Length: 592
Ligand code: ARG
Image 1 (cartoon, rainbow, N blue to C red):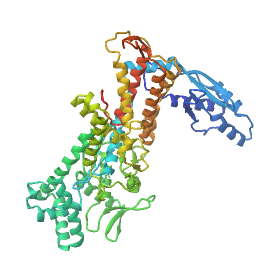
Image 2: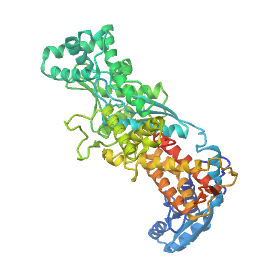
Image 3: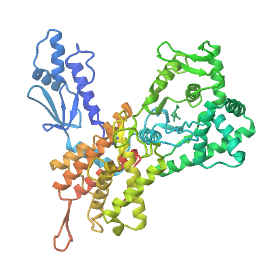
Image 4: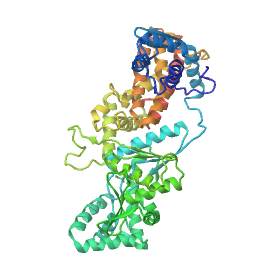
């Protein structure tokens, strides 16, 4: 069985090939163990390139069936039944039945050589999917906060991963731009900002107005009535009210856009308001089909599976966040023809999305065998005091000031290292933004998204730990090794060198990339990629400490010898690192 044809692609998941080889061997050797599942195959042991330890488990299962065999015998039988594959050099059995696999250096070299010549990219998909990633989604008239920052960073990076694989990704910004709060806001603007129809208030005032209008809404009946009146007028598209609403949205939109530009985020805005008429249709449809129940004047919807209902229509007749999400999901399935919808929203909303999914399945517009819907939640951002991230005065942290502080601290670090004397102004500016934003993104992505994490500039700007600074320095170092060759001409037509142990270790580390990407598409956890890149950087460092790449005359500094095969290994390492950092949304620089 020749499973791998390097000429065809450079994106080979060695791990999954080995798993399927062993899986087949188990089926052949022990057909009685039908539902064995995936055999465990692990990389990087001291004794082999990969190791499979399914034998012990097989023994247990056989014993339960009354058959007594030793793991060693099982392992040998599996090896006998293992298909041929050109990525494998040799297989043997050690000790208590571990199966050791040694990979073929020639074949792995071919793959790396292919990457060097064709860049690192997956084979075009035969069946690309239409994927909608719903992320960022701040609310109009409110400041974007760190929770939205997480969604923005994770959503952008996930979109990049799915695009890289070859899917058709639609990035949607489902901003909160609709609902009662706009009636409240317009009512308040009528009092406090009489020019509101032609002139937008500054964002700071807008947020103040928003807070005040909430207080008034809850305490002043006359105001409440007027606010409702404004909502009704807005929802029935009264031109004056729509105009006021548009101006309000514009103010916030400009603020959001500034953040997206700084962080290099691309996303299409399609807020809750987009679905107004669709909400009306879907509510009527659900009502006609008998899915809505009256509950104290509210209309709610249950699915037999859910623990809470969705509130589809409030007792005052207004729609809710639930209503807009039902209409949105339907639009995405029916009009966008999405195959897969991914929501990147804080973990606090997981029950909302679970209920939404169950109700959508129950009412029949979501068929889970045709359209996949996933909730990708994440934990909260904590301050260094391990409490919810807040400013000293207890306010939510403004994203813009957070980014400003990141830039300032990075600049200070660069100056501290004397980089301002070495780099041109332009280089310094580039390094500063790449580092500052890179660090903020990386600090978020390198933690398991399900957990809370502590936001600490000191930690994320440290150049020694698992940080973006460390990775970006590692990459610039690799590039400078390559550039050191200068005009020294040497035939780079040689092949990548994999003879030294450290070269081989680096090659095997690099080639785990497809496995990492596949893991991310399984669990949406980007920390796998961060761990991988950190591994690559440290393994490169080990290689570089042990293997000369360029030998210079210590007196004159003149190049005496170039180890071309190693320079090529540096080049291919840079390619993997750049690709990985780019998927994390981290810009790289040539000098820093
Ligand atoms: N605007 C919401 C919030 O700030 C997030 C919206 C997420 N997306 C969605 N389709 N509900 O909490």
